[in-house]
Image (tube, rainbow, N blue to C red; front, side, top):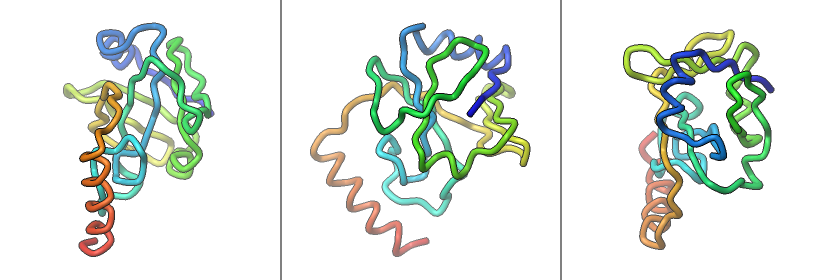
Length: 134
């Protein structure tokens, strides 16, 4: 899979990541282990770039790019990504698009921090509530 990183997005990311960073393109809709949401009605239309100093076996599918960034994703995310995948920076936000249109106009960049036990409990509680409110 390939992602085009526009010059404006590359300039923005250069301020947020180091050349040795691992960048995971992850869903941020409550379905991924990196999502801060516990449950969401916005399945598949909210993404984030998670920056880590270590690789993650689950997020090992490379996203080839001409910006020289080490970007990977996981299999569940690929069902929402199509041909023409592009990351751009406009109106002070990262925008993820593909040939179908805008996937997320406000992609966040998050530094990975391992969740605490309390955060894991809260995430599980929110997941169970998410199924009841959507």
